[in-house]
Amino acid sequence: MATVKELEEQLRTLQQTLEAHGIRQPAPAATRPEDRADYFAHGSDKHAAFLGLVPAEPGDGDHITYTSPRTGRTFRLEDEITQFMTYHDPEKAAQLTLQQKVNELEIEPEVPEDARPIWRPIDVPA
Image 1 (cartoon, rainbow, N blue to C red):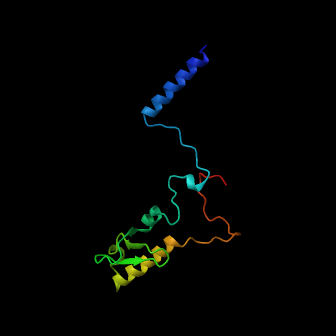
Image 2 (tube, rainbow, N blue to C red):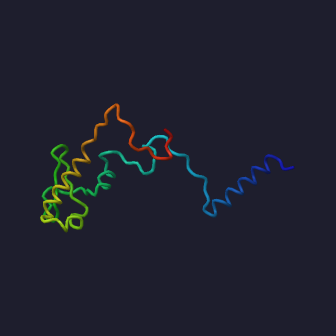
Image 3 (tube, one colour):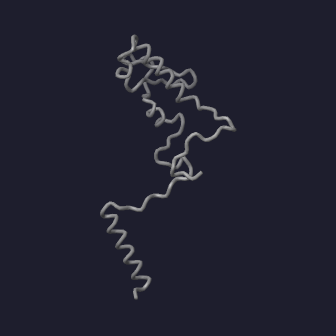
């Protein structure tokens, strides 16, 4: 009969063999949304990138820019052409979309206290 020490060594060898073949033990599920790898804070630089916003200099002549009256930060759209090509006035549509996205970035939505949760990741316990 194998000793505990021999069994532990066999287990370590088995784990190393599995990891060498790309089989790893799954990471424990995050209990808070902030701990998830795909989380980014509202208003952060990652949130801006997710919305397609790029920091810009005020008065950049090559791009449509918008300076926020709340924070004074200036942004431009990452792609201000492709999504507006079919509009009658693509420049105006891009300007309005840019303004809406900057507002979405800077104004955190208020959630009523009696609101039910709309979505919870499947791996986060209720």
